[in-house]
Length: 341
Ligand code: PMV
Image 1 (cartoon, protein in one colour):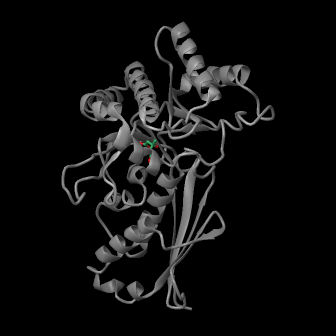
Image 2: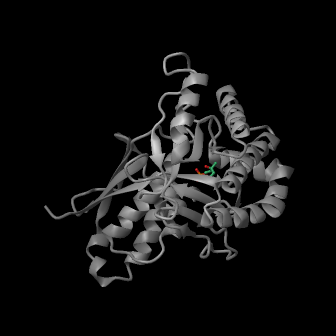
């Protein structure tokens, strides 16, 4: 049987300067630059196989074992754009006639504010690019699946440049430093709740753009300075500055969510208990040793350096509810090195 198949793995990325709000909904062009760390391949990731065959009657996709509709504007936008680029290579002539089957699995909770769509779309686009041998930057294509996906195509720390071109051609992700730059960097993921988030990032962002004055202030007066300062801190391996900016940006993102009308509430009481605990720890130590950041959900991501891991884990396990206690229990705390791709 004639067929072509590729399997890829793409890791999750955790933003330290958050993307929230689009200037172009369809092309997914963000209002502001954002910056994230990409986790290592062997930890939280999406694994995707794309197959093309003349025997496939239509395009199909299975997500975590369940068939989903391919009639999804973002999925189709990514597929069409990769295929458009693939047409430039004569060798793809036959392959491009065939339908594709896509099978993707996450090894962590989907849609619980744990960047599952980022890893999923990065993997989908990367696997398609490999299938058709498409070269060059594909982060602009992954961005059109899920904005933050463009940052999962590189390891280390990665910046997504909002860009200024109306067609989005300069809205792409570039590596700030490779995974080898800061080998002591770690991320702890505290899974507070792994159920699906209440307000999707798409609608949360839309509503924020329409109603939040704080978002307008953030985009113009806060993010540009923060991006420059955190890039410098990363290059200089200045953890206290990195940590302070990371925590302030997470807090401001959630303040924007609350400033949205009606408000979008992503953090819960356990999330706030984690924030208090980290501030207590940092105060006792005299300078920040751990930084928290929360995406569109209650789960905490803690950035810290290797020497702080054991003590932080001990504190978290001591002060926060155990796995069996209640709905908000912390269910698992993998230690994830952020730097080794
Ligand atoms: O890429 P999306 O649409 O899932 O949005 C991600 C938004 C945040 O995770 C909250 C922030 C970010 O920059 O990753």
